[in-house]
Length: 281
Image 1 (cartoon, rainbow, N blue to C red):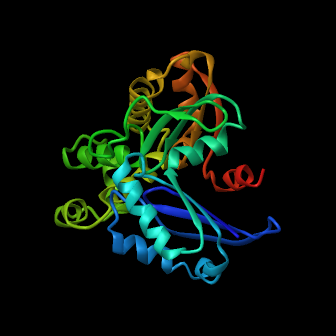
Image 2 (image 1 turned 45 degrees about the vertical axis):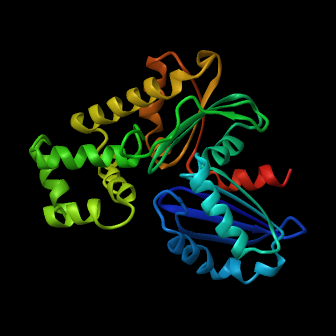
């Protein structure tokens, strides 16, 4: 059996495929980002997935595409853990940008971006090779136009009293914004990037408001300029997107791409179904 997982920082989608190429298990768990989760958290997340663990002795191949695996140390950390959990399987661990590229590009050359809890971008040759011009350094330094990026802006503007009053009051009604609780989530609890990303839902819900529209446009312009346009031949290739932020704000993103004279490609929210098709070829 073949186990395939696509993981962002917030959630992991799992699919288990039988030897007859039939789907046996579809499951969702917490994220598997090894840069933000401890080994014990990762172990618990995988082994608590009862639907998958039922077949642990029958699983011979495991493909895990996870955020945070763009550098060797966290990638090795997750690889060793999976080897322990699935002792009979050959293990492949790659960064989640590979899952995005395999899923969205239809086997053709292009630029592939992820805009979800975090953000990333690469050039895909249409076969197996990915080139990233910018290393992914996470939400504290990068992740333009991601959920965590937009959440950070909204929180800052709320506490600096820069939100229009109507939106300020709605934001206050929707979320727990007690300063002590905000600081606890940001500086003491795990996964502050996912905590920040939850606030992006407010931006999406009120995207027609001028204030929200300006933030969205600025985020997309930053991402295009800092990530997409770094790649060679970018004006000749389609620009594909994976992730909830790009999928739910694709009209705004298409306008931003047009303003840079870039070619819009495909948009998918979750790559898992197309990733399974890729592996079943």
